[in-house]
Amino acid sequence: MPDKAGAPPRAWQRMLSGRRLDLLDPSPLDVEISDIAHGLARVARWNGQTRGDHAFSVAQHCLVVEHIVRRLKPDADRTTLLMTLLHDAPEYVIGDMISPFKQVMGGDYKLVESRLQQAIHLRFSLPAQMPAATRKLVKRADMIAAFYEATRLAGFTVSEAGTYFGRPRAVTPDSLPLEPMPASETEAAFLARFADLEARAGRPNGKG
Image (tube, rainbow, N blue to C red; front, side):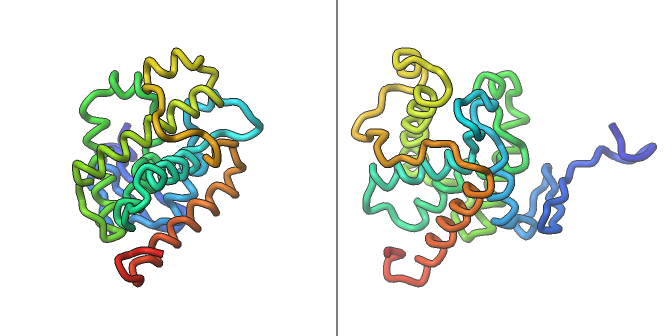
């Protein structure tokens, strides 16, 4: 629906930082980590169908996946960990659609998501496209996180979750931050982890 008679539909969103992000042609200059953290901490995974007093947010999921990547690959460098933390970052704008609905939406959704991801990567001096090896690692960690979220929070049986996500190998749920947290706490934790990884840029080999 046009904003005004004869005007094209509005394709941008105003962020709390004051930035105005164009969803169809996103600029890295309009991406702010504060907006990403704030938005992701308020987007619910599993369409909100999880146990607990708080929604299990996309921001908390990203922290879980980054934690798993560190356990799968203890020598993972700063770039890999930052891309992992930001692997679902476009959802601060477009929300978290469950996989069955993504299949219905088809290519247009994936195109918008891909453009946003590239803009986010470029904003933080990361490769526009995630390297194949990193993508495989993040996907493995993502499926492990999904299995534990599904069985511990979303009401899936172990057998059912195993069918859709595979049964985790090598990573147990101990120490994973799976207890849903208030949005403000998750936002702060996400920003703190991002700041820690950003700070590694000045350390030898990005470690520390």
